[in-house]
Image 1 (cartoon, rainbow, N blue to C red):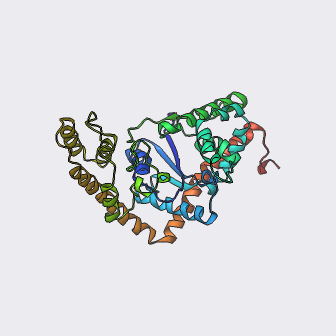
Image 2 (image 1 turned 135 degrees about the vertical axis):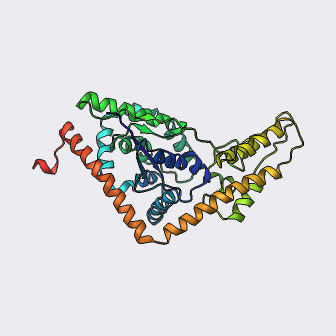
Image 3 (image 1 turned 120 degrees about the horizontal axis):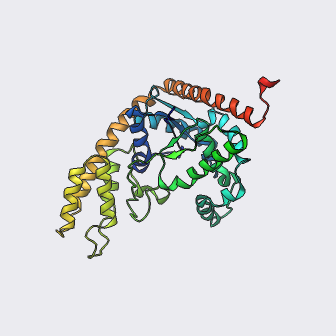
Length: 339
């Protein structure tokens, strides 16, 4: 039987921006709506614990991210949407996987090197073991649902390869059970920072680097107007900043408009960037307004939100508990039913 299970997780990092939306969440919704897959999406709050954090903010951000996902179009009748920490089987499987994952596997993970180097330069830097081992938890997240398809960007490709390695090692040691998850190739735009189009859009670069997914019209227009465009290089007909604005316009579905601007700039016509910025701002205002209205409607009923969070966890846990019953039997770990 073909495995059509899709799993992906998103960290509750507070405000979601258009880079998160077009790079991941819009694709979650598309995969849900094509009807070809069983889609499972998770707010991975345990992953947000690898660096110093405020406990009350983590809980609040997890609930807010759940609301954001629903506002973006995830449907709890068609997808399982839940918060990771409400399904304790994630951490149980992560421990078992850590015993079939080698130290060498983890030392080769480039993201740990990059993130730890960023922390080392700070005063009172603390590099947690969780920052080193979280790819194992990531493998458990995916394989707990025996998902064969994972929609991730190139920056997560190495972690997905580790998930396949862990699944393969487990199967060789304990018997064939887990699928080796594959990257689900999808066309997702990589949006760059508005204030520095040489870098990926990120909140770490400051509020002028991104447009929040639920920003009001004035904020959206102000940020787009301030976006870097002309780099002053006459030999570059279309600068990185302009290409980024064209990518945003295309991501919003305005392909013909983007192509018309691109032709104009490629032909060496006078570089008029105000019309392009106005077009991008108009497209984003339309998007954020619709999402903001939908989000306000969902957030206005907190009891329903909490009920949906509980129901999502119950659906996910029903699958996770069955997986762990099988895993305990295969690995020789005693379960309560054994006594």
